[in-house]
Image (cartoon, rainbow, N blue to C red; front, side):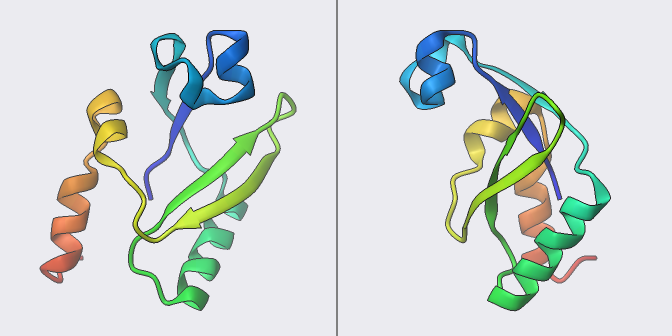
Length: 97
C-alpha cells in the first residue's frame, strides 16, 4: 500500500481540493496498521487487486474512509510524490510478490 497526503493551501481547496490545484502540496505518509488492515479486508471482500482509496484525516489524526475506486487514477500522485505505483502494479500483473 502507498499513501500520499494532499494538503490544501487555500480556502477553496479546503472545501474541494480539486478546485485549486495550484495550492496543493503532496507528501508521502504512513498508513496506521488498523487502517491498513481494514483496507486489506475491504479489498479482499470486494475481490479487488487494485483500488484507490480516499480518506480524510482529521486534525486529531483520525482516518475517515470515503471510498475505494477500482479504476482510480494514480499516475498524477506518483508524479507528485515519487511513489512506485506503476512498478507495483506491473509486479502484481506479472505475479511478482
